[in-house]
Image 1 (cartoon, rainbow, N blue to C red):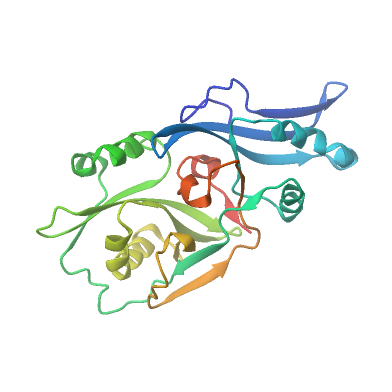
Image 2: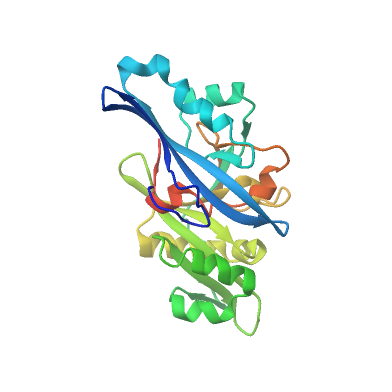
Length: 258
C-alpha cells in the first residue's frame, strides 16, 4: 500500500486527517500506469477510506482532493454502500456489477481429455506473446496463481491469472483476474473449475460477467449481482477500456466479499 508499483511515481499514497498530531482519518491512493489502445494512461485507485466516528462530518476533506485529479482515471474496486452513494453524486459510474459463478459440479468434460494445464512459472513463460509476457513480469512476484491452458497438438493458449480470495470470513473462492483467450478458457472450464477447486481448496470460481461475450450459457453457472458495484470516473474511457482487475490493490493485498 505504501510503495510505488506498476508505474506509479506520485510519491504519496493517500491523504491523512490529523487533530493535534493524532491521525483521525485516512484515504489511500494507488497510482498506476498502463497502456490503453497504445497510449500510456494514468489511473488512481482509492481505498481504505476510514474516519473516526467523532470526525465523520469532516470525511469529505479526504475525498475532495481526489476529485481535483485531472489527468488520471479514478477507480474504486471495493466501495461500501456509503462511499458508493457519495461517489455517484460526483459523477462516478458503475464498473463491475455482476459476477459469473462457476460451481464445481462434475460433468462429462471434467476429465479434461486433450487439455494441458501448466502451473510452473518457468514453463509458462516461453509460450507467451509480448503482451502476456509484460503481464507475467508485472505480476511475477504478486501473490496470485499463473496457469497456461493448451490443447494437445495446438499452438493456441490461454494464459490465466487467478487469485484466492474469501467470501465473508471463511469461504475461499477463486477469482479469475485475467484470461488471454476466453474462448479456450470457457471451452475447458468444466475441467478447470473442478481442478482449481480441488487443488486450491476453493468453494467456487468467479469472473466478471461482462467479460463473457454475447449471451452464451454454461452449465452449472450462476450470475450474481455485486452487493455494491465497483466504480470509475473518466473523461473518455469506458469499462471495456479499463479492462481486467490486474493492476489493483485487491490483487496486491487481497480482500473479502461481504
